[in-house]
Image: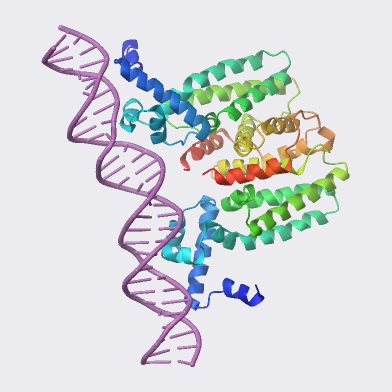
Length: 220
Length: 220
DNA sequence: GGTCAACCGGAGGGATGCCTCATATTATTC
DNA sequence: GAATAATATGAGGCATCCCTCCGGTTGACC
């Protein structure tokens, strides 16, 4: 597939088509942000002022629309998050990374959903998730090597943290929009190396983590 | 309303009616446990081998069925949880209470849902929730007074813990059914007095908590 | 065993969502 | 200003769920 072919796919030829596509993406971003990734496609089409058939013409599957709506923002997030790694203080880097991540979850329910789910076999989403896992691993390992984060935790534990934060955000978005920040700082005390207590249960394996995220996606 | 009236309501006169009612409750317990409190009522009726109209005859609203299915188990849980308060060691009592609670969440998705939601204006459910809040407050205050739990946390923080555990359980139930226990022990390190660092965000107020739980219930 | 109130079944109306396809429209090209 | 290929439309089929209502059934009581 040549570059030209790709351009062919990405940019519809006709101007009106491009306009409708843009409107659809904008509506999708709004709707996903409020209702999560399971938002009604028919409502998105209505909001965009476009017929449902047109939505399906541009985005044959929900995932196509999801990616079009989120990919730029996700990539931007991934790039921005690198800054956490550039902090001098490894603990600050760890905190900064999580704070940024949690904040994005709080601001966009779709983003929140997207983080918790994996879409097996879809190269683009897998790439994004893998990239994020690597960031988490980096930021965690660095803090562990510096002796500030406890050594007995893994990337999977951070994913758990992301899940739980997602739930807290879902619950508190309306009533206490900043509650997640309190939760984060509370949780940070669980991750400090000083005076850590042993944990009886082993961490989740990578396969378990992966399965769990696929599961979250499949269960209505 | 006399005791006789209550009996009248609770025990339908005809034997076949009582049998169907029992079958419905049994099916509801199974279905709520697997699918959560939003399980399809039509499927529950089908599973019970009963027509949908019969379900509605016995349980005019979803909440009626929910209560019939969960109330005994909930009451049993509340009674059992008192044991945590009888422990000599306040910290052990705290841990024991949470472990028992989390374990019940893990075993029943409906129970898990039910814990996180409030149903305004329904005396029975409010009573159960209030009773639980009091238990949490007791177990926490005791551990705080003994100096083993950090003093800057509130009942609302424990509710947050319940929410997050609920999410982790939903995610890991199939792939790693014991992951919640690891999470619990990790979180415990955040609640120990000896490890506490200041938290920048104030705790949620009681109203915020209440609103959040109602919200969770109202959002599809 | 007959009567009757209590009970049951399940069709059906209404809502929502997914997705397709035949038809109508329109931007672009010549 | 045609011709045409790309595009848009939205009705409609299918599925799921909620809930109601009325005709038919049956247990309980005399």
